[in-house]
Image 1 (cartoon, rainbow, N blue to C red):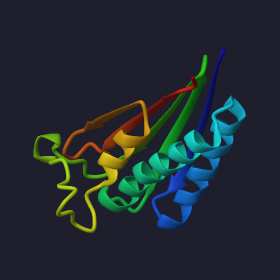
Image 2 (tube, rainbow, N blue to C red; image 1 turned 180 degrees about the horizontal axis):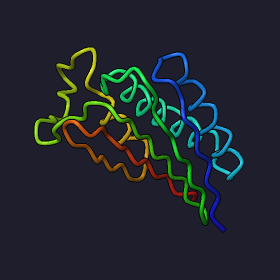
Image 3 (tube, rainbow, N blue to C red; image 1 turned 180 degrees about the vertical axis):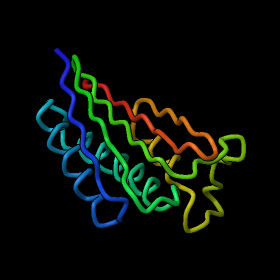
Length: 132
């Protein structure tokens, strides 16, 4: 059985908590332990922050949560500016800047992270966590 939950939120920082709380409830309902639920909340929050801050869009971003056979998937998509993955650099953890850690954090907390982006066509980040 596959369950889908889709929400559309204004591209404003104060609505990121709605996405985090929704992810938390879904993950908890699936049976993830406390640590995994917290990891999912942080990763979803980072992806949503990216949609709000970096998309350069003042409209909306969408989140689709898919639950299937112990697999949690969150797809965060914006219709903003997009970016070039060719120019993405992994952060220097010994000499890091104030920002630029979002993708690194997501990849550290989730089992799989995929980024689909194109200049002028927005960004879609797919976060996956498996229930063990």
